[in-house]
Length: 332
Image 1: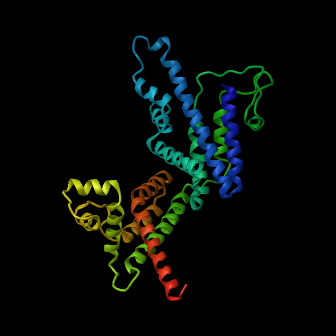
Image 2: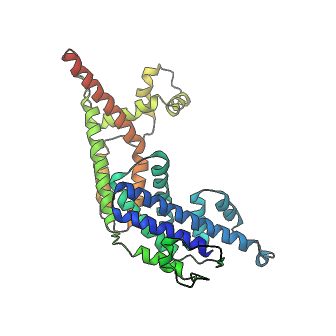
Image 3: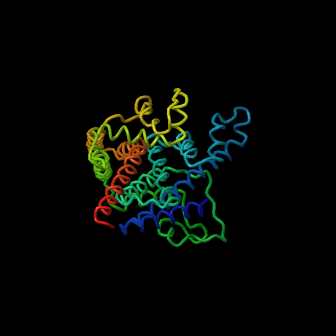
């Protein structure tokens, strides 16, 4: 177990080093290593409980969370987080933060998404929050073999002698030391996220205007109409849109389905959302709790994602048509 804990400390120390370099690429490495270290300990919590739940003390009265334990052992990161809420004192808001930031780790690792404008802040927040929580982990056993070797990076955090180079309390102290070793400003999280939200809103505001202006004379519409028609025509070519229209008894030709959906489908956004989004950004900026700020930001990104994607595609198509018309007029 001592070697396992030393390995976690080694990863966190390396994550801390990358964090201090303050570049996007280093922040990416730091966030991924923090996430891996956290998941390893979350899984160890599950392993510890599996061993305990199979012992004599649960023979007469079985462990009451056996279903959650089995799911955490076989399941995903979020299942392990859910189990840590039961057995490791993980509070709801920190659990939500871990799940959100694990999703960002997946974006970085699997999809190559950069999130450059917020990545440094997210990496700092994840590292600090993970270290604080991990400092509360209490190993169920503590052993060391003479054939084992303490990782170089971890040596400065553990005390002991050559035969047993660490104490049970060293891991908690190491996590606490690392959490305090850089100037993390919790209040800055809401500022950075609100700045990014403002950037997103500004981009979509421009997209709505492009769609509203149209390509040719006579194609101009209101911004409300641009928002609604963009969603309708985007859905008109999807399975969801066709299935909805069929259930509602639509019998027109494919070119009429968009108008039908405008009238019948319960779109989340039926008007220009920019003013409401700007109000949300102000509310986010005023939130001093980094966990609540991240939850607010992520909820906005998820709920508005389909509309934003549709507007970006529609605006790009309109701009491409405008460019083509300009080229035609120039004789190209």
